[in-house]
Length: 497
Image 1 (cartoon, rainbow, N blue to C red):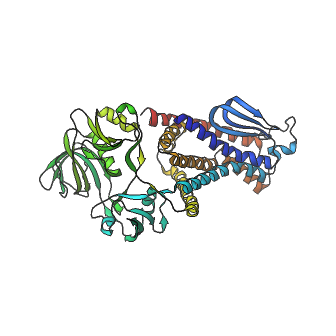
Image 2 (tube, rainbow, N blue to C red):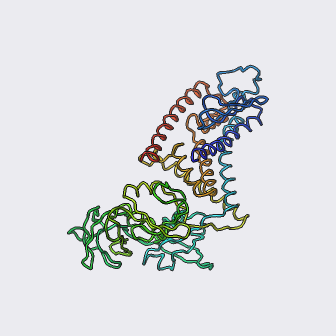
Image 3 (cartoon, helix red, strand yellow):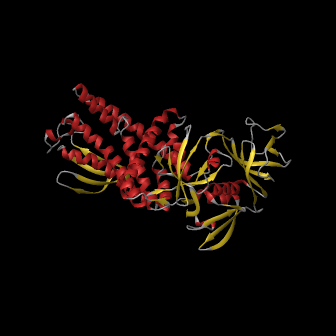
């Protein structure tokens, strides 16, 4: 089904993009030979008055073939010279080329407005507040819904972190039990934070004093297998840990995933709709609690403690008890509680197949506000994509940041399991990405032809058609190499990991 959904989505976004080229070519009376979805051999076609509408065998794109695209071909039987693309003025050619990306971007805005009006926006709910942090001192509590940060309305939980990061002062509006509150929070140095699976008995409120025989400080190198000594004399062996470096924060974690299963491989005994209640005795309450419980299932054996350490102080500690033969999962199904035991290998495979419903419900601002907020939200995504592309020049392995068709099949499957709202939002992101990428002035992309047209408008001289042909051919082969490399990365990341 993921493959079917992907092909249907691809047909939609490609047809919208190519329709932009097509409609403006027709508007400027360019003779359109073919309007095609896919590449390669023709499966079937419908012949119009002038244009052949084709469906080809390889469903990975599409094209509009116009008379006069190849400037070296000056005559086509039955096509008047004035209807060939090459003989159109450069400003008309610029509009025809730019219309494809413009339609893709416009489609993203339309989809996001539709999603916003129908479903509203996900609530930004506080999951956990770090004890004694600026957020805790200000009075924030788990379950509070953040509605704005420094005057920016929060339309997605992830935006909370975006608008807090790097701020000297955070002005926050939130809702608790239907009442609206405002607060000012000054970020302070928090951390380093350690989320540790420990073999040993550790208590909340104690402090970490030694790593091995060395007194603990922020420069200590904690490793899996390190022996930790605490202020009450207890010791514990590090089985696994996650580390967050010291930085200026307010001290909140936002809700993301729930404990309700959206999709899973049924071979492991659980199914869609089940709720994970605990793993190895650790209650899976809240997003962070569930993540901690999953980490215990992945690494813990026997009995021990999961501890959260801020700086050198243990701010949270709870016991786990893993069965000798694997991982115990307690779940709820149709109001009844059951349990299963998986081996560690089975549990890891189970986690890899697991998709969970979001932890938050939506809030609805009303239809007119939803339209405006939908535009604002799409603007923010647009800006973040531009920033992402700009930052690729500073990334060590920039190609690893991309996902191709194989990866999208996986992502589409995950989105479809979470419902139509998530799927439509993903489609909006894909078509927005398609429009932006095509505006890049890279040979054979629409952006390069926009540049060629602009050069002709400014210089009032035709560019040598052979130069355009050579540049486009080189760009095409580079893009094909890029496509095959991204496909290889997708296979290794999503299917053969």
